[in-house]
Length: 490
Image 1 (cartoon, rainbow, N blue to C red):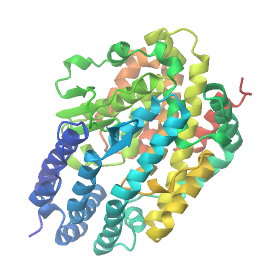
Image 2: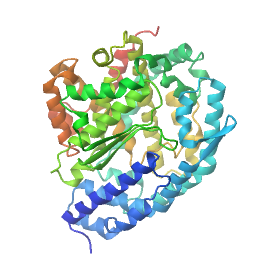
Image 3: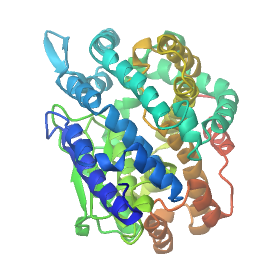
């Protein structure tokens, strides 16, 4: 018999807590294997077709209905998902006379100054992806497509459109962004590469960009011992005592199998939120720390009385927007002067503007690709299409091997893209209302904490309209890129 809404919410929250705790321990390198299948088994009643139909019939919040559909699909691929994660965790790459964990490749590439060695390691990583991971990822993708049909939608794209997503509409804006920033991007990236690595964009490869954005020349201003004090001081300026937050945990230790991609695990919102990063060196660590701190503070301040769907689910462009809001401080001249006092920052600020332009263009290309992937294009055609779209947007030859590994589930690319626009407009509002050093103003801190307390109860569009009176405008990102980088490169 289908569960009623109160019971469904309770079990959803319990399942989410167990799943996020399992993911956290595995991804943080604390647990060798990922075991999601038993969790899905314990909560199988949340994801039955009858339960999905009952939620639809009851007119349940669309986030509850989305969760039920995603859980139904996730339950159908649970063994394969565990196998893929555990294969990746155990995978090692032969290199330099020894072996390194697959998950350690990215930080190794970032810190490898020799071009030939970087490219050799990257090629070995791609070969391992193709041999060991892609067969599993392809099987998962095909199975997810079949389960989506069972859930009542002809394609993954159609399923998410039924929950209010508009990836096709967003794609029109991101294509305009790509066109508006094409010349600017290529000129600035070419200049950075020639200055820092000794060759231009036409001679670069993806691992070279990893090294470029590691930017070791800025390390002196971003020493490891100053990172957490800078975060504590920044949060204090917003009225938050990080050390007094009993519901917040920081996991910043380096472990061999810790995922290189930083993340926040909101295991119990707001009761237990864990910030996880793998230190890799320099300014990139600061950016990752502050980004995940944005997520962490958002979830830690979420009002406990909100229903589960407004604390745990909702429009993730909101939490990503708050993450970008704190991350952007690391490239804000006013913040750099106040919190790091690292001397002249013009070149660093320009560098971060190029890095942001690269990221937005990368996600615009990913969205174009994922529209085809999730509309049901044959998997056999997608490796070449992935490489074609990423290469065209970024100017370096992307490998075909990453066509499934480089996909965030649930059209999450749309959340990142909308979050960049949300953050840009919210940040400008904070500056106009409280000054360029808004992050040190008590009134600004009160407003930000109030917004955090709303959890995920509103969409990014609605929240921005409430605070600023503006509609979410993706075009502002191109305007900001040209304002920051439009003059001739030195």
